Image (cartoon, rainbow, N blue to C red; front, side):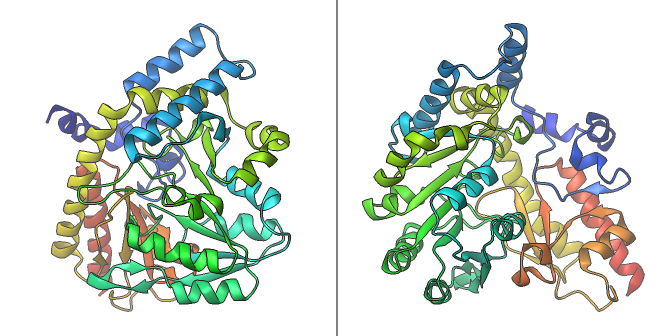
Length: 393
């Protein structure tokens, strides 16, 4: 496909010249640690941003732009996931983490712990204690076909310890799971039985692969709608996290009543260009997204082949969604000394990866890697890792 050739033509020099954080934070490394794509942005989004600059529309966000973003999000949620949400229940916010912070401050019972199935997205470990709350880690368990499943008994015990909020990340970062209806319903039974609440991080919702369908947790039933606050965004799927816009989706009538006095608190950090870009992505960005998903789908398979050939001690289960690969490095020979594998590969291979330990105790001995890169970059990453291991055997 022509679009695939275009992505293949992107060079490492091109990526470094673009100046992204991913490729300039460690400029002498092959970068695979930051969850952003190497493919730029959709031309239709670039065009909308140019128009905003030329108009200019960069002052305080006009009500019409907020309304358009909420309407576009509502349309997208319905067309993509068959989830009908009135636009007036969709609020702009700066990002998913700002939405989480808002939920902790405004809706969670004061001082209660937060349940975090692990491994998990790293900032949840930072923001939660900043708000005076403990994190109760509940490690995933191995299910069928070596699939990572939520430990429902462990989650129930965590609620019994006084927790109120459970963080659900679906599709899951870093494991790439896209939970089935049966899994989500079983989780909802546990949450409801304990009077709990779910913060559902669905930022990767548009990024699923053939055979897997994202189901918004709050869409399952009146029960899940009543105990959930959802956060999503176009930022991951369309590669625009720096534009600072996400959506807080309110499905509880009680929470919606409270939002009459709280809307400014959650929305003030959202940026006008971000609202414009999210609106454009949801309405006009699907062709670009489908091209990108097809390319990343190929990379999912390629990574498995590269590891099997060059680094067989590292195991990997292809993600069902997201563009994140979770690598199990516990089978590698004992050559890293007292270094983590992320430090080993940084120092010995000049490859930038995320240390799995940053994702919780369940992530020790693992690595988080990005698949949204030109295939030749992915190959260089694996070969550099393999050569580093071979030199130290």
